[in-house]
Length: 160
Image 1 (cartoon, rainbow, N blue to C red):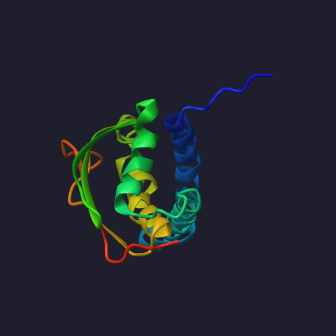
Image 2 (image 1 turned 90 degrees about the vertical axis):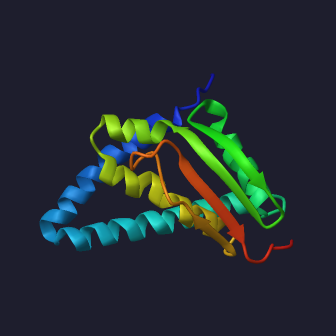
């Protein structure tokens, strides 16, 4: 029996459809602000757990440079196009010049929800990976920018 990998954008599209339905149900019971807050909190919690899983697989190197390598591995299937700008021991700066997730949310007219489900995950995944990481991302493709501008700084490098 052979197995085939599921396209990560398709996985996220399926998740988005379910998330949209859940959000709509929450919005009927609560005001929109409260529904969005609950939604963001759940996504943040899930993303921090995901980052912790990546950290466990990092062989103890939870540096910004290793995190960039991890991101590069996510790009291998063409889902993301990443352009490293600078890599130092305590910080990395890179651009995501193409994001198929953003393209999918834009095509589905779900940019607001996509901002929470995709872009909103980034900072929490970073913190789950290394609680000393601080993500600055002044612009995203999802918001209409030409590229996502990632700057990850580590205040203290965790040692194994």
